[in-house]
Image (cartoon, rainbow, N blue to C red):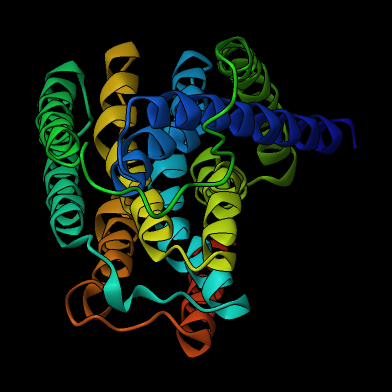
Length: 315
């Protein structure tokens, strides 16, 4: 019971701290005149991926690297199937006018690079340098897009945007986020590992399920708000950007802390599910299909089926 309460407390702290960090970062970026889509692909995506980063680093330090890898792969799958599925099911997303083709291609390229690196596992510092070089290239490309779009009219604003927010308040939000995230991450990893040991479930499966869903909650909250406001670019940009950060930056940084073994089950199943879940979005991104409620039902059911298979394989 204490472990469950501790893990729940860690999740709550992560959510509050992640929200504070996103609010501070978004408002800081808006002051620089960066369009909402670029904000979502970079600042918001990085802010909502911060829990995954801290949990992965903490997992390596605590000697449970399977939790780090499971967290990232599971979060990417959850981001597409659950984080987009639930808002689509509740409200529908008008994605027919989305402009995320370029960033989607970058996400698929990042996924393929990560899969290739995994087959040369365990993932070590040399692989980390390759992943970090890739994220650096993508960030520079996004920076160029931001520079080109500075004069564009900003029609969409992510949740928490307030052009009148004073500088001191922006700083407080960012500091609260940076302080709260490591505290929440430590609580969640420690208690999730204890739960795994007690239940006889591997840390990899806990990472793929409990921790992955928990650390995807910031993305879910942002995407639900975007769906309510019919801001499809913000919703898609948040998910696509978060997935790219997870694969390249988070695993890249975590692998500098310590090697990350890649279980054979990942090479046979989980990595390909992650890739397939991303490819499902091709009609939405390139054929200008709306993510309606039927899409929401399909995506959510696919995620439930995935969790059932993962837990069944562990039984």
